[in-house]
Length: 78
Image (tube, rainbow, N blue to C red; front, side):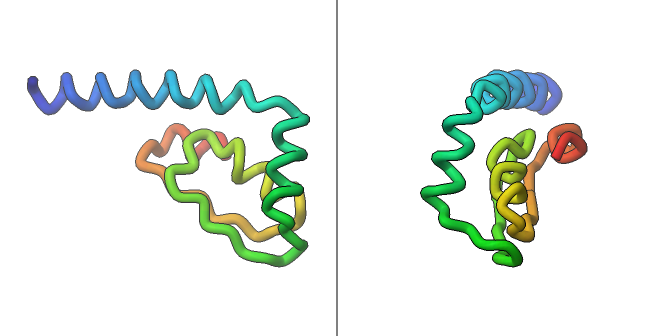
């Protein structure tokens, strides 16, 4: 498989995963925030952040979030 074909395949896989993340309901976001028990000013490192669903949920608590992902297009959405 060529490098280009591999990158296209990986990007397609990440798009499918991101679609699942985007399905995170408001109830699940609230549950995530409760489970993490984040307080304003705490620092969070979200590795493989995708489109930032969990980064945004953590940020909504007032935490300081750093999101990291291979896809620049996903990071642009965070």
